Amino acid sequence: MSLTFEPLHRHFAAAVRGFDMREPLTPHEVRMFEDAIDRFAVLVFPSQQVDDTQQLAFTAHFGPPDIGRKKAVKSADSRLPAEMIDLSNLDENGYVIDPHHRRVLSLLGTRLWHTDSSYQRPAAKFSMLRAVTVPPWGGETEFADCRAAYDTLPSHLRSEVEDNFAEHWVHHSRSTLGWEPTAEEIHGAMDPVRWPLVRVHAGSGRKTLYIGAHARRVIGMPLPAGRILLRDLQEHATQPEFVYRHAWQPGDLVLWDNRAVMHRGCRYDLAHVRDMRRTTVLDPASVHERDCGDAA
Ligand SMILES: [Fe+2]
Image (cartoon, rainbow, N blue to C red; front, top):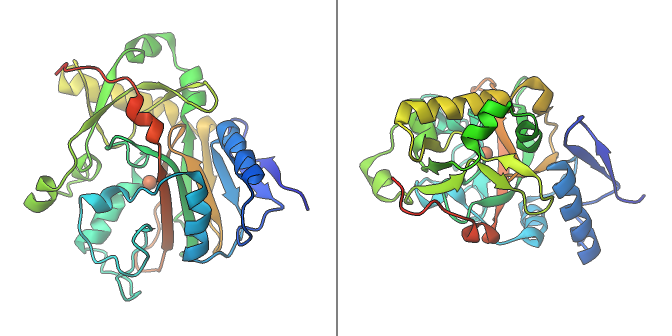
């Protein structure tokens, strides 16, 4: 059976058929996937049933690893390999964590629309999330196509975003929920970084909105004005017509391009196990992206 991509949505997202992730990947297949990612931005690999080692091996074809917030927040993460991010509600021994525990409350930050690692330079390129155990209801992941959102921006919004930059900070998204970093976590935080609100997607040449929950202000705008602009952009980008929702089955792996989409997790009963394991690669080219100088 040959490798094919079956579109799942009018604007983006495709299911990958005829592929076994447990087999070694050829350079030709890597190029096919990169071309498909440039087009679809989200690739769903249904019921692959790979293990951690196989997920890490697949991930390594696409760039150097990114461990995201693990650089700023220490946790007892020994359940998984060092280059894997644990998005489960399980402790290091595999037991469900008390929903009031700080780590689970931090996890609620993933329910906000965001792009992975936008708070660092280089930012993240692709993320790959695998479902090991899914809860009885909820826990889906939603994706919003920020290229289609840009294409359809009303002209008054387009003129406001075109040459503006947002500042992204590693602790901002969770702080907006009332989760406060400790003094040690603030001390260990990466410096905020700035990204254009509109970026050109390297693979497709399409313009895309680059926003999300890590963005805490718009450079050169009063704080409330910038935050309202960020909210208005997010509301536009996450209208149902731009959103694909993936309902997980154990063994599914979904790959997405953080340069082209935002995503968020959906509500589920925290008393039930949701074991999700993420790998992410950096976007080394993003360090060369334009910055906005020293404007405050
Ligand atoms: Fe994420």
